[in-house]
Image (cartoon, rainbow, N blue to C red; front, side, top):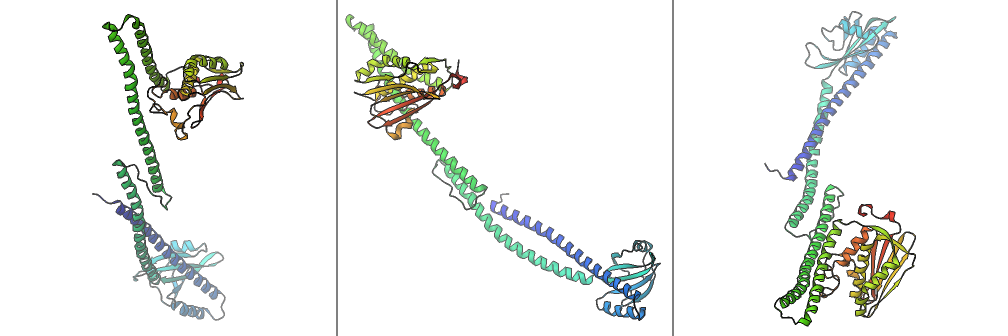
Length: 479
């Protein structure tokens, strides 16, 4: 059977309230009854003590005293009797109680001087009475006493009236509680419904929904906040997926273009050689062209494989002490011709004593990628390669005077397949936009940091920071 959550809340609230009121009414009735009974007992004990004192210290005789108290107590519906040491009634007055005699057990209890209080039903009477027996002692021996009785019917009437008022109060409280429970349950159910509706919208593929803030700082609000955080993360993930898909399509386009061109060239030259369509004097040029295009294909494939190895932590670093000036001179020599083709001057600056702890081949790979990137986006300019140090780090800077990068694009250059100039699909360096992604991963494997600062049309500056000591390098990647 399906029961709406609203009704579940209301029923549970009413159930708790009913149980609470039931227990409260039981305890309250018991308390009132005990309170009235104790007050009545104290009243009878007080009258009994006064009578005994008056009988002991009177100048008019016991008859006068007993008659006076009899008239007073009769008006309060209280009767009293005197009894001897054996429990026999000696003097009934007011409303004498027939066939009343204290038992030996009762006499033994009051012998110590303490009054005896009993709540019982007397023979021949339909109502319960409160009986109080006070001893009269002479030389610490029981000589007799006084027995006072009062019917409980009057007390029961008062207790009954209190219970009636208590029932009315419970009914009114239940009505108010039902109304408040309904309103509060409705509010909370509506809040849950908003989350349910938003969840349904998200499940349909719309991730723009938001749960509005609530005045209640409770678990439902926390659930709403978590839902909003979840949707934000989904949105970012979808944007990332969309971006990855876009870059994947761009990557496939680049792959098709970059692989098709050298393969077409290789195939054409091989066909010409196979059918003797290339003159003898041009064959060496054809073979050189095939070799160049084959190396280009190998470089493209290795670049992708290298990136995946680095990302999956499948490489080991062979850390050694390297002279910074020596390695940047090697970079300058390797890339001198490519820089000269674009009228670029490479200037180096570093102290001969400056050293760096790194993997030689990987450091060479890092710097070649960065300098090639600078050559790619610089024409008729200068590239500066500097080495320096501070107390904690060895620093290498590569700065160019090229076209720079838009500020909004700076963080994107580390992403795989990203190319700042997507129209530039036919270039000899970083064909797939993997170079800087590899650079960042390699620097991080050295426990280093890489920063880039760029101003559009003014140039770009890369700053590489490496730990100054070998002990600060990542142990898990050291050979």
